[in-house]
Length: 54
Image (cartoon, rainbow, N blue to C red; front, side, top):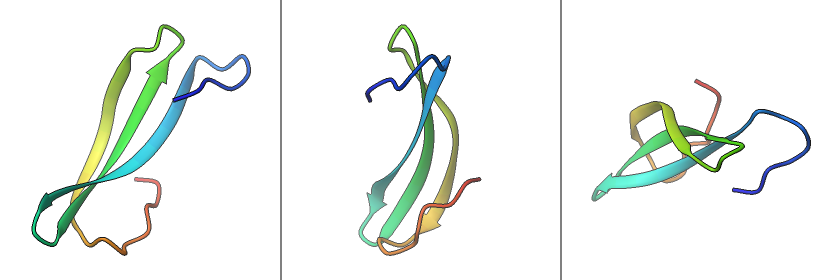
């Protein structure tokens, strides 16, 4: 994930398939050192569910 400007971390959200038709939405942060930290997740989404803030 590229860093933008002088912020201390860069938020990112993504989808991960964990079953035939089930997806998890992940909220991940990357600090200035490049370390990634999982800050939250939601289960039981579909492939077409939009990612919203949680």
